[in-house]
Image (cartoon, rainbow, N blue to C red; front, side, top):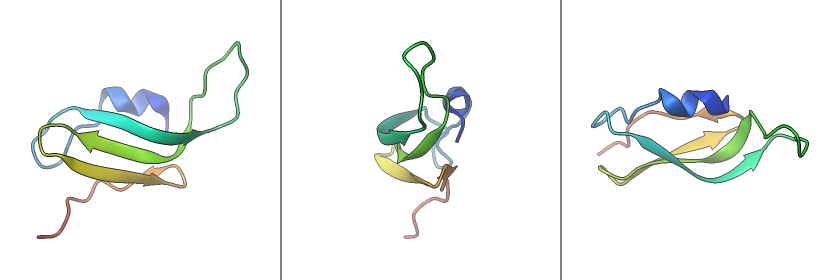
Length: 65
């Protein structure tokens, strides 16, 4: 997942802002920060729902109730 997507992705439940938690980033140099997120979690503070990122793909499906 491109890091730049963090600015536009929103929670599918409440449309709130998502925060990035623990990640595995692509290889980078000191001069250039990582631009790809391989693994991690997107977290909505409003809903307290977590959306996993696996193999660079965010799973934005809301949890089943």
